[in-house]
Length: 111
Image 1: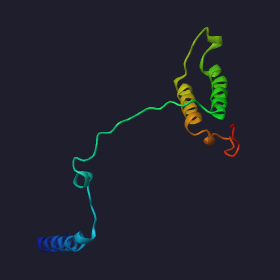
Image 2 (image 1 turned 90 degrees about the horizontal axis):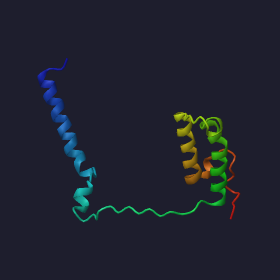
Image 3 (image 1 turned 90 degrees about the vertical axis):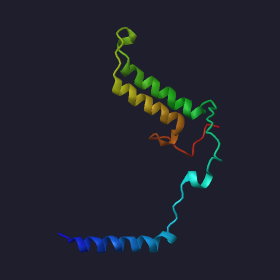
Image 4 (image 1 turned 180 degrees about the horizontal axis):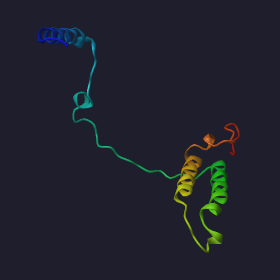
């Protein structure tokens, strides 16, 4: 257990170290640097069509997985939420990053 004198000595050593390091440390906050000059954020959505490769992957995923998710010919519709969530993630991947899907060659293009 440290005595009160050792605790004070340690605290003074830490303060001395901070005083030595403060000029060498660069810590800037966005508010300090820009102030109120930063304009408000504007978000724009630009829709673009899927490429041929993306469309083919998207269609294949839908054909393969919807038959497993939706019941017997659509008569008795049952939704398996885990499978549906997995399908949604795969469809997002097909749209945003089609080359991350196994078996898709990044050097083959459809255009």
